[in-house]
Image (tube, rainbow, N blue to C red):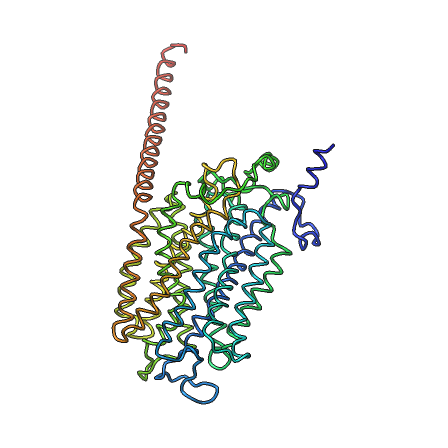
Length: 533
């Protein structure tokens, strides 16, 4: 009796919003498929809102520290307006310090966020993070209304904003890993991870719309969006199939047949009833670091995010500073913001392509290294020809986005989910958020270093500063690939073994067919002369 009462008390309950809705279907297989589709879409918009809110500052940099040669017209009719303390000779360094303060806080808090995410209700953890992110994003806009010109205010707001932003990634990866098995995870998460680029695009469009005359709303509107979505997350996000009595995924099979999204009917009801026996014990950071591949992918992501976040925070500023219009004058702030979205469009295609490639190969390392190596010539040509014309800037932004965001996307999504459900963690199922936090937290340290170095290098020399920035990015891409050397060798060896086994199996099947045909001929021949078998 006590055991039955305990089961009732400990049974996971659906979110409040879902409890208020009528059930869609009673068939558990159909219900599981519908919920997986809902999770895919809902978490997509959840994390898109995180990037939407953090993108605004890269656009508003042009308003805070504008180019005196710009043709933009401000609200008072002058050629250029700026905002102290970002209007002096050290403007690039100050702006870089804002990016660095945000990303260092984000990286440090990430390790604690993953630890907390594996021990709290993920939907409430996300709600807290999204409300805090919205508040401190809007606080940057409040500086205009309050007439604040103190650098410390902006730094403190960025630090607090980074801490709350760190709740997003480990939580949404944990939710996705709870709902989706390993079998097309690369493709599914490649499509899903386009939320990063979609959020950047929406953030650029929203901030670009207001930046000319009302830059404060470039922060306030994204803050309202992510805060509102945070409330919806607490009401409607089932973080685990158990909460809505849906079928669980298979985490240890790498085939399409075992992917619950593609073939949910093949998952037996018995596996659903057996999930209650799984251990809910969470793992510590030390144990998570011992999972094979965590250290290599963490180091690689350090340099991959250094490159990606340099583009995220500085690309609109770079375009505005280097690209000329048909009259030979710098393009407007709004146009620079819109042009920067092509990098993210390329990133969407790259994320999907690298995820699909990793599923075909059934290994992640080869796909990561291939895309990383190809990003090096893309960066080199962007530096050479990116400022020649608007068409060339768009084309090279698409290409760079494709190759830069591809491996970064794969490591932070499918690789993190794979390692968070690694076979070495049997008996400790709650490791997904911790592993995602370790990998992305290490990468976020690189993301903090990149924008800071960019501000310092670009501001040190007006003639060669940006060229040196691209050299830095090329070296970082090369190091990102080199750190995956052991993973690459292992994956090539496994791929070769799998091909050999497949060839042997095909050869055996051919020989079996040939023997069967000979046997049939032999039997029919001797049967004709009266021999009995």
